[in-house]
Image 1 (spheres, rainbow, N blue to C red):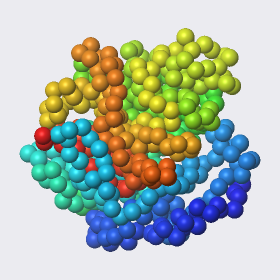
Image 2 (image 1 turned 30 degrees about the vertical axis):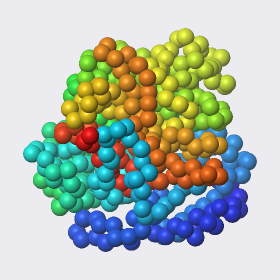
Image 3 (image 1 turned 180 degrees about the vertical axis):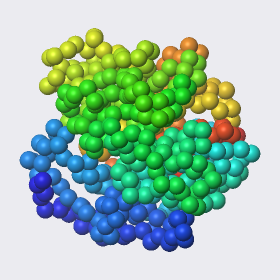
Image 4 (image 1 turned 135 degrees about the vertical axis):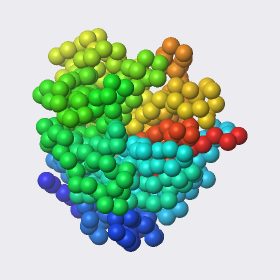
Length: 437
């Protein structure tokens, strides 16, 4: 790997970032101060010294073909990020009548969310992470987070969490793990049981959003191990398996990197987000929202992007007309991650069955884009009508055009009371959106 001398802005970053101070009582974690700085330490796997780098031309060529480790990508994401202790919720904009509040900011590197046992306003929210390597349990009572516990640690990119019949399933690159009877063992978590270890070990797009479908099967995406390449059949797809890890089968092909999916409340069909490739400029290709109408459909990667844009290298092999186009183009490099259909009753009726999508935000676009939650509006037949911002303001621009990032949405989750939760891996936070006109 080749590195060049750190640029000037890195000295500013190193001067600004300090490791978070954390106190631990048993396995319960309380962040005392400098909470957002924990992101730096988690990205660098426990180091108390933040890193900063720039890539040489040769290294950039390696990245273009997907050969640099994912850690390099994450380091690049820190550029121009404002890490103030104040989350500045007052700068977030929502439609009239909606309010956003902080549920907790004690979940470093928070990624996918899954609701565990929940009744009468009390329950447990499980949260995965990326480089923090942890899985968290957020204890809830009447809309408040009363405690945050680390129930698993030292895992490889445990982004995905899925809950079924009292068991918590966790993705860890090549493995799917299970924590049995976890709701009753938060203070003394059981050791993870390996459900399967047969997924590829590649870490480039190796993190996995997972979820149980209405059929009772566990759905697991396997991203392409590169920016753009023509990988073997193990990669670039969405698979499903029985809860015991058996009967694995492919549901969708030609999927570069899906980090969010859900099932339509109208017909129980699978919809998913997919992140477009890099290095084709600021405006190509768009991220996608896709709809699987029958098993085994191919969605274009690596031959065709956004349904109508042949890849410069692989596009001569197959035509775009051979593949399923997206139902909507979400925008170039917005990093569309977690998505959910809104099935609650708290929001106005026109929000029912809309799709909420967390846009993590661009990492290498010359002008940043994303860093928000959007709503995709569907008609009564499930056809896309339009997309519109729902929560934005994590990306700020001052009068001189300087950009700063206050948060990076990762996942959304509809709660039983109809409120919407949003995870933020930059701030280590979970927000709650409610409607109260």
